[in-house]
Each structure stands twice: as C-alpha cells, then as structure tokens.
Length: 362
Image: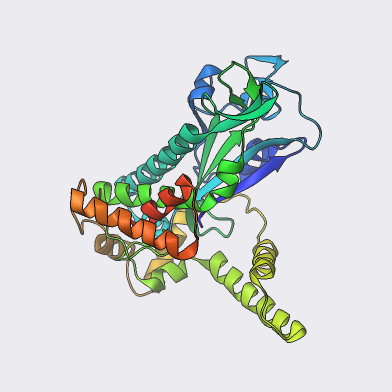
C-alpha cells in the first residue's frame, strides 16, 4: 500500500501539523494545507488552512466559537482524528523533480485530483453510530472535515509527492449532532483506499502528460518509460529500509531457526521503517534541492530533459470502456477476489475493480 492510515490520539494530536510539519523543509516551497469536505463548509472552513482553526477542530471545538464543543468533550487519550497519507509512485515524483515548471504543475495537478477523488469516496461512505430505540444504528454521516497537506519531498530529501489527509474525528450526523467518525471504513479498507488513489492517478496523468504505465501489481504501477535505475537513484530511504528488513529477517531466522509468520514479519518491517527514519533537515532551499536532483540524473549518464522527454507524450488515453470490456473487467475482479476469500464486502470488490482498470484510460 502507499495509502496508510494513522490514528491521531491524545492531547496535542494536531500540533505536529502546524508546528513541525511546516518546518519539515525550511524554504522548500511546500504549500500550506487547505480545507475540503461538506462538513468543512458547514463550519465555514474553506481555502487555505488556518492553524488556529485546525487546532480547534482537532480538539473537538467549533472554530467559529472556540467555547462550543462539537459533541462530547475529548479525554486525554481520545482519538482526535486520522491521517490518511497518499504517496505517489516514485516515477511520478521523479517526473516532478526533473520536469520544467509546466510538467511539475501537471504532475501535482494529477496527484491533487486523485487525492480529492479519494476524499470524495471517503465522504460518500463515511458513517457514524448512535442508538435509535435502544439499538446501535450505523448511519450515513452528512459529510466530513478534511485538511489536505501536500509535501513534495521525503525526510531523506528524495523527491516524494505525498499528501496528508487529516480527518478530524467529528462528522455531522443526520439528526444534527457532531459525533465520532466510524473509522472501520478507513482503518479496515486501507488497501481499497490505496487502489482507488492509484486508479485515479493512472487516469489523470495520461490525460495531462500522455504517460504510459507498467502492469499494476497489487493495484500499484510505475510509469513504463522511467528506467529502474532512475527509480533506484531517487529511493535512498526505500533502499535503506529494504537493507534493514533483510538484516532483521536474517537475524530472526538465525535465532529462531524458522521463517517469521506474517504478523511477526509485519512487526519486523515496521521496526525497520522506524529504525531508518531520519531526523528533519533544516534550512533546505528548494532551488538547491532541485539542482541536486538534476545532478543525480547526470551522474546516471543522462540528463533531466532526456528522462522527462522519454516519459511524456507517449499515449493518447481512451475515455471509456465498451460494454464487453466492462463485463470482462467485472468477471476478472470477481474471479480475483474469489481466489483469496469466500466472502467479501462491497469496498473489497471496489478495490479489486480499481486494481484491474485498464492503464490506458484517461
């Protein structure tokens, strides 16, 4: 997955996004966040993110009347929200890093549109729970509040377009109350969120820049005309994590005389991610950073312009599937999910459909 959901708990859960995240890269031209969501408009939140308003709603307060609680008051350890982080494939970030201003804007536009589409899907499916006649009912929410905070580089200063979709844990219920989001949707269906984001991105970039895609694996694809050597060059953090995972797995096998089961392997992988997480880099200048990225391309024996020219203008995307193709797609999705499980929910079928969508669609 490259869409991951983090639960934000406890006092000060929102402060990271206004105190630390903006200083992730000083003078790196990272944009300010912005508000989206039907419930955001209900609270008169629109346009660029305001730190005071953001902290207020993360504390469960009405940004327009900070003395008014939106629903039940939070405790010290209450869940305050969720961070749905959407990360672009490395080839997309490389295209942004090496392209001219127009290419960069088109890449960012495609990513932003894919994120917005995913947020719209979450909003259409968002629900809450409360008692009706003594029984707990699950009901559709009347919209969500979401803050979109996009960044264009990783902690290791590799090009890495990603957006934090911060969803405060308050949704408007049909009876007018502000209640907690039923988070089972986004927590249980992270693979669906990932497949939907990538399907949208694969539709947007061919339309904007005429790129081609490799065959998706688990719903994720790199661009077809960006060589693997280039992807590796701009993936220092990924390479470090992989090396750390290999070391941990080898040590586990040596000590336990067996391979780790899936749950233990997952724990080792999460440890590797944390072990290799670098500190924040201060005083990073955007112009210097882009110059360094261009120099990396030359060290590979090519030029930034050549890498971009090879990737863009390759296809004119189709606009739709014909009925036979649609039926075939549905059959393939049902067959694929049937191989893995005997029952499934609608969101799991949507994941399978998104992963199998033709990459030539615009």
